[in-house]
Length: 127
Length: 79
Image 1 (cartoon, chains in turn blue, yellow):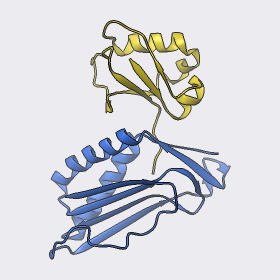
Image 2 (cartoon, each protein chain N blue to C red):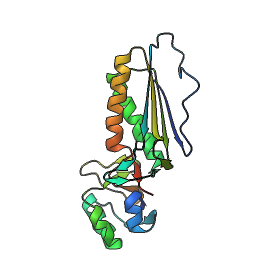
Image 3 (tube, rainbow over the protein chains, first blue to last red):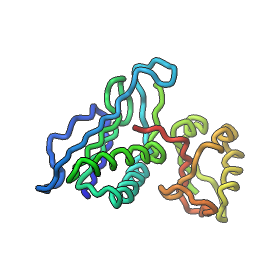
């Protein structure tokens, strides 16, 4: 599976070039944007600030994908995480997955995000 | 060994890294004892923070070597 991981400090733009990998059998493109909500706990916020242990975060993500793709084989995944200040309503994370059928793509996305939330060393805070 | 701090651990420590002097391998418990000796405020993080050795979460009973890079990882919250 092709894996692209990016960290950015600007607005996350939707990738313009799909497919990530040329495969005539790709039948699904699943995209997820994680947005900053207006409330954090009980506090009203205007933005969140994100920081990462970047090298380890990428390593952990790649390990997670390697493990998960054995269960849910997909063709490509692109992950973009924004760092620094992210205003409410804007995306902190984007995940795009290409797969032959929708089921494995949805399952990979769901399980990847669950694992991401547990172990990938990225932190948010209120500025 | 080089110790890296992130998020609230960095704020408590007041720096993003420091060198912990040790001539022998340390258990996780020994590491925390020395860390809290040097940064008493980090005692509050001991129960929730995890350690990563060379960018991999520490396994149970794994020792920390004097030339390792150790990251103190408070609960993550990305995405």
